[in-house]
Length: 274
Image 1 (cartoon, rainbow, N blue to C red):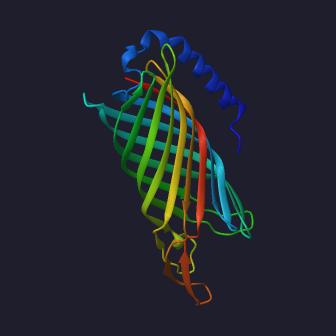
Image 2: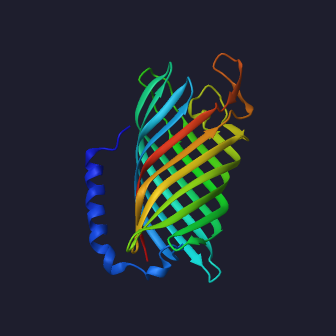
């Protein structure tokens, strides 16, 4: 899915506002390459795609709120808390069961990381970090598809360890370019499928996910109290365990497994620091 032209216009207007406001709000030059302390709030627009290979996919555009608090000390050690709340109306398509339009989809994510700034040279700093993250997703597929198939609610829980590094280098008098790459070590996950919504006497499926990985990358531009730039998130989760969910409408025992799946999301972010 492509970001609409209206969103691109919003991005252009916001960037123009940042460029005009930046000079009066910039911190002292000597601090530009270090992680900046304080509160941050901002927003994201993004394109989202989730897929279970050879079975189903969900895709569409999302809008998100982001917030963070960063603390630093004289030793250049920092710790940071991040919050993300994201919402989208997605398009569902499945092999054999048709399509569903405007599927509500929520993502909530909280993270805490600790790291340290290292001044590599006069104009370059390196900031590695490690932490803990939790990602929650709610997907409402209740209703009927175009073929009459009955949908159900889905809940997803990921626990992971983010390990990453940010490189900051001075690009101009009061501008810093800050690319970040991150590996997300997947610890465990839990997928709850409300199959009781379907009927036929099914119980809800509660599947454990034990194997997966994630990657993140962004290219942020920092000037004064503003940070903005493009970003990418990716998850690849292996097949879950198998659980018994009851008997179908014909009296046959039924097992449920969460298939292997992947998620890709990319977009643009704008933040302001207090």
